[in-house]
Length: 168
Image (cartoon, rainbow, N blue to C red):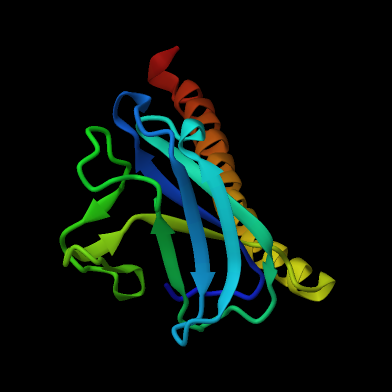
């Protein structure tokens, strides 16, 4: 995966745990392609529902923008023949290159995930908020202008129509 911003600190992944049957531990690992592990999280399968988004939150990775990371999800205690294996939301089409799945089983496609970021600096936070706020203000301005024109336009037309002598 390739984060767009600095401060990567949360990854959301959609899991399926049929009948809540898999209670084995799950290991989430974020590493560089060379193998250096940056973040490591272990959770119990008991915390994963059937059709549930799981949030893996960790200390921010400061310079994460544009860098390729490997996201590894493993269940080392689950045997291959288990009746209730954990699975992730997955598309067999590789439509989003930064989300490409590399599977030991030979599967290819895309992993469904969401990334979230912590602001690295106060300036970056203010800039992000401004870029999110400005389009909303402009769209609100456009909406209010349109509403103003329509309301007063209809009132003006109603006033003009009521002044036509034939209507009296």
